[in-house]
Image (cartoon, rainbow, N blue to C red; front, side):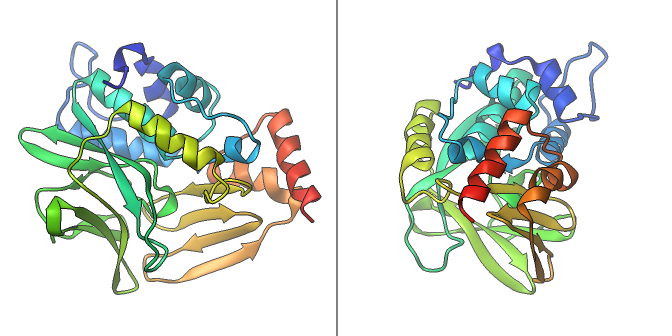
Length: 279
């Protein structure tokens, strides 16, 4: 399903700095601890970013293309790239992985289209939400789906899943004592080809939040970072946010320092050119 057989698993594990359990034969076991360790290492190491959309380049969802960019090229990616890579790795390890299409709920009461890609891993009869691609607000670890209402602590952040009519599940986050919906998804399985269609909209439609905008984000156990345009936001679990402007000449240095994202000279120059032309 996810072309896990094409993935260089060793290079991927090195990229995310995997330090979890390994069996005596050198293989990873498809158990809950491995799932947690891979998910946590992935979200900590590969930033969410959509710079190729800003640059007007096509976003290729073939596994080898994603590996070349996120693993060997040490770039980041947005949800379709992140979760396609995570799905391929988990499938290669031996997990049962299925896709879902989610509807973003972080923009108030606006009804947004289904554009977010998430994963569901089934292990020993229990389903787990795995998502390495929702940016700075997303979970850093798997979230159990079979226990609606149960609070799940991840560092300083707390999540829960609410079950709604029609089998819809909503992922929620607690910030500043207030529960907020992040996104919701139905039980309908999504396949890689479905993400190709969603990717086309997100990378090219004029109403896409990624078209014409710099977006780089990173979740974490404590402070979470989001760069949108030339404004850096630090989000805290108690509801506080801190914003600071970023000078164009400091942009690439900030990406390296705060997000671990080192752009090539070509991409760094293009990013600066785009922002200077917009001044």
